[in-house]
Image (cartoon, rainbow, N blue to C red; front, side):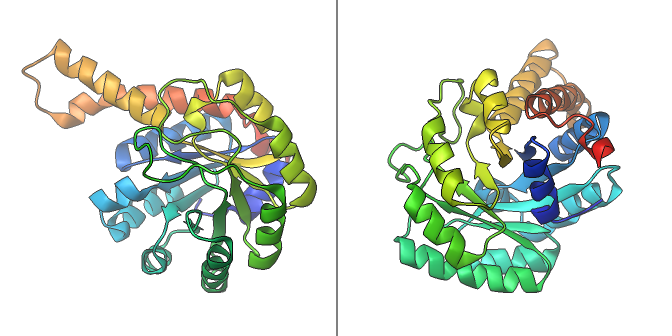
Length: 283
């Protein structure tokens, strides 16, 4: 079933697990993620980032992902990730996305707050939940492209109070698109933010977090943890293996079967770390 994430994420915080937000790029990985969620009886989020919406119009992505969500046996939120343009957010909401993220993290604080307030007003009027970011999580494959800035608790408190967002993404040591698990998580900073911000928090760039730390973060009243690169690595590496095994193969539907199976396994592994198993049975 297609849902927004406000109720979903609040329940996760209250019951000591974290929602897995997976960046997907179409039917193949979205279906694999939902199968993993169904096997665990857990809610999940299908997210599309800038790379995805640059490749495929947001209206087409919405048609695919919302249909996958509607047919799922568990709650599924379809979320626009890291949108910087208000026009794109409006298009996504009109197309059927149930949740959006406005990313003004590279802007001065007051400008970020002002723009986020505008998004919240519009999105909430449409029954769509809103995530935003304070501090900034950088990119490992684009050094210098966006400044990495740790979240300051006082700024997070001000931002949360003045914007009315449903969830707040914070920077505590992760980096987007890390291919190795060596992120240094600042748990003291996370705790300090939680002492002044009562709304659910979100952690981005979580592929680079060790399994042990991922479990620890999930138990720290974090509502959502974003994972993208881990699934892309699995899909790409397994697809390469399939093509190398049969260099004459050209049927992409056949070639995609094994990568989809492995993406489902990886998504399930991450969700188990986030303590998601059977949480829907505990309501």
